[in-house]
Amino acid sequence: MYNPKSLKAEEFICHDEVMESLAYADANKDNIELIDSILKKAAERKGLTHREASVLLACDIPEKVQEMYDLAEQIKKDFYGNRIVMFAPLYLSNYCVNGCVYCPYHLKNKKIPRKKLTQEEVAKEVIALQDMGHKRLAIESGEDPVNNPIEYILECIDTIYSIKHKNGAIRRVNVNIAATTVENYRKLKEAGIGTYILFQETYHKESYEKLHPTGPKHDYAYHTEAMDRAMEGGIDDVGLGVLFGLELYRYEYCALLMHAEHLEAVHGVGPHTISVPRIKHADDIDPGAFDNAISDDIFCKITALIRIAVPYTGMIISTRESEEVRSEIIRLGVSQISGGSRTSVGGYCDEERPHDTEQFDVSDQRTLDEVVKWLMEQGYIPSFCTACYREGRTGDRFMTLLKNGQISNCCHPNALMTLKEYLMDYASEETRKIGEELIQAELANIGTDKVREICKANLENIQNGSRDFRF
Image (cartoon, rainbow, N blue to C red; front, side, top):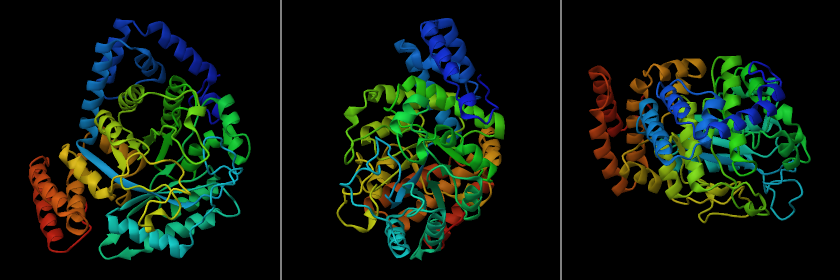
C-alpha cells in the first residue's frame, strides 16, 4: 500500500504505485488538455507529483517537450540564477565487500589494485585540490567495515578540514558513503559535514537485489531507508540519485520523485540535491551489458523534468559526462558540477591521470581552470561558495530562503567573492581577465545597494590579500 509518510521502503517507494503511474502516463501522454494543465501548475514553481511528472516524461509531442525545456530553463534561472557551484570528488579507499555488478570496486574484481589513503596521503591530496582552487569536496569510499570503518571516515574529515595551505582551505566536506546507522550519522553531523549523499542506484527492488547479489548493500530496505536515518541523526541536507541505465528510466524517474515526496512528507524538507549519473565504462565493467542505457536526448529530458518537478533542489552532474552534454543539461537545470575530477584513489597527487583504480571513466578531462573559463564564457558564475552551510542555512532554513527568493541576496555576492579568490590565487591569466570582466558586469545584478557596496569593499579587500568573506 502506497504511503509517502511511511518509514518502510516498500510503502513510500511502492512498486504498484509506480506501475499505475506509468500506465496513467502512457494513457495520457497525448492528452494535450492534461499536459497543458500540468505545465501550468509547474509554472507556479511549487513542483509536481510523481504521477504528473511521469505524464510529461511520457509525452513526446515536440512542441510540448520544447515548452518543458523552456520552463525548466526559466525555473533554473529563477531559483539559482546563473551561478554554478564547483566541487571535486575525493576517493579515500576502494576496498569494498559488496558485489555490485556495475562497479569495478566489487569484491570479486581481482584485477583492480586495492588502495586506502593514509592520513598523510589524504593531506597531500587535499593540498593538491587546494592548489587547483577547490573549496568543496565530496568524499567517496567503498563499503568495508574492516578497512573503511566510520572512525576512518571521521579521521579523514578531520584531516581535510585541518589542512591550510597558502590561501587554500576546504570549507565544506560532503560525504558519499554506504548506508549506515543513526549513531554513525550523528557522528558525521558532529564532524561538520555538509550534505550526506547516497545514490539509490535503482529503486526497482527485484533489479536492485540482482544488481547487488552479495554484501550488506543487498538489503534494499536498509539502503532505501538510509536518508530517514540520516535525518534522524541530525543531518539537515541529504542528496538523492539513481544510476541511470541500470533499470528503465521512467520507473527510476517516478520512484526518485516519490522518494523526494516522502522526505518532504516525513521531515518537512525534500532532498538538498539530486544527482543524475549515467552508467559508464570502467575497469571490469561494460556498460553495454546493461540494456537500459539512455540517449543524450532522454538524459536531457530527465534533467529538465527533475528541475520542473522538484524546483528547489540542487542538481549535480559529474565528469562522467562530456563537455557537450554538460553544457546542455546545465542550461536545463543543473546547479553544481565537478571540475578537474579524478575518480581514482590518490589520483590528484599524480601528474599523469591514473586509471588503474578509477571507479568510472571520466569523459570531461579538462582542468578546473579550463572548466571555470568555459563556464564564464557561457555567461555563468563559477561559485566556490560554502557560506550557507557555515552560516547554518541548511535544511528547512535554506529551503525557506530559496522558495521566497531571498537566497540570491546571499548567493550572488558570495559567488562573486569566491570567484575573485579563485582568480587571485589559482587562475591562468586568460581566465583571470575573463573573470574580472564578469565580476564587474555582475555587480550591477546584486539586488540591494547596501549588499552591492559591501560586496565591492570585500572584493577590494580580496584584491589586497584578505580572504573568506561571506554573507
